[in-house]
Image: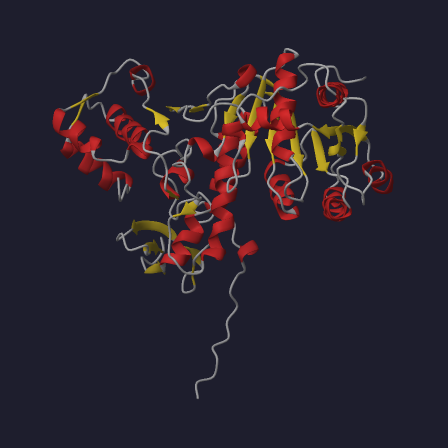
Length: 151
Length: 303
C-alpha cells in the first residue's frame, strides 16, 4: 500500500499511528515535499484483517515477539500456558535491568499469557536507553515511544 | 454535473521504493524467519489427507515415536489448530512452553518427541476463538490461523532435528495453505482408508499436490483388523482398495496399517506404541518409518 501526493507526485511517508482501543485505527501519512497530511481510518474488521497478517501499519517499532499473533489474538488461552522467562533470558548483554516494585505490580496485572512478551519489550527498551530500573514512568514513556497501546 | 477530473496518476509498480508501512517487507521478514528456523531441520514430513477421520494424527504420533526410537531427533507440529490431538497423543498435555526471546521451548513427550499444539495453549474444552469484531469473521479468520501456524513453525526453538512432522488438518484447502507457507516439504504422506468416499477425497488432494509440483506417497490406514485368533487380517471396509487407489493415482504405497483397538487406545492415552512389539500394526509402522528414512531427505536416503 502506497500513498501518493497528487500535487507533488511524491510518495507520502508514515507519520503517526493511533489505536483508540475500539478496534479502529488511525494512521497519518505526510508528503515530504509539501507537508500535506492525510489520515487512513480503518474500521474494526479492516484493522483485524491487517493485524491477522502479523504486520503493523506504519512499520514495526519493536521486533516481532515469539507467538505474538497467537497470544495477542487468541481467546480462551490458559493462564499458565507459558513458563516465565528466566533472568538470563531477559538480561542479555552486560547491562542488567531491574524492575521497581510498582512496575512489577503493574506488570503482574498483565495476563500471564502475554506477560513474558511484554516484560521483554519494556526491558529491552530500558536497556537500549541505559535505564537500569524499569518504573511505571518508564513503562508509560515506552508505551508512547513504541506505540504499545494496550501494553 | 461536474465532469470527472482526468489526470495521469502513477500506478503502484511505477512508484519506486518500499511502501510507507513496509507491509511487504514485514511479510518478507516473516518468511525469512521461517526459513532460518527450518534450516536446522533435516526433513519436513507433512502428513495430510484432505479427508477427516482417517487417522492422520494417530499415524503422525506413531511415526514420530517410531522414528525417535530409531535414534532420530523428532518434532511434531499439530497444524490442526481447531481439532488438536498431538498434546494428548504424545503425552505432553499440561506441560508448558518455555517463553524465551529466541522462541518458545517445546515440551518433550514420548520418546523425547518435541511437540507444539494448540492443546498446550488453550484451556481444556475451549474452542479456538480469535479476538476481533463479531461480524464478518470469515474475512480474517483464515489469516489468523495461517499466522498461528507460521508461528508454530518459525517461533519454536526446535534445535537440530532429523524430522519435523506436520499433522495437517482435514480439507484440501489446508494442504494448499501449508504448501503456500512452507513450500514443498521434503516428504508428503497422504493418509487414506480403504473406502471409496475417502479415496474420492484423497484423489482431489493428490490432484492439488500434483498441481503444486510436490511429490507424495500414499499410506493406507485401518486396512483391515486382526482376527480374534490372530491368524488373519479381516476387512473393515468392503468398498475400497488402497492398492488400487495408489495405482490409479500413480503413487507409491508406503504402508498398509491394520486397525488394532489396543493400539488406538494406547495412542489416545498418550503412549503411542509405534513399532513396538510384533503385531501387524507395529510391523506396518516399522515399514513406514523405514520408507521415510530411505526416501529423499531421510537420514538413510538412497543415493
